[in-house]
Length: 165
Image (cartoon, rainbow, N blue to C red; front, top):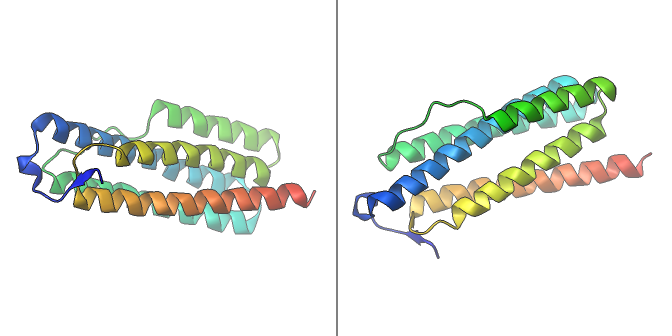
């Protein structure tokens, strides 16, 4: 396992900074996902997808707060950057696709899948960091398991949408 059960103060400063930087990056990614899912909920006509996307937005909001708490527990500083430029561009693209595709649920699911894959990769990378404190490792594993579930659900819904055409 790549985590430690010791106090973060024992860890060297450079490794601690790498972990905190990665957690701040994950916060930004979760903000991107939260706002992306909010946009998707507003742009899709299907009522079930609206509910699903709103639930994912709330989940990502909670992930961000979980990560902020973990950074503070590790003695780090939470960056106040907001969303990423790439996330902002992705949301604009989603808005454009929704406008030209008449709020097509399938295209919103595809965009959700793309976003989930980015989150999945970011969490895998974070879980691969050396000397993760146990609390950080457990938090990241929990978030990643929920991302796995949402990715699976989105892919299932997308497959059902394609099959029903």
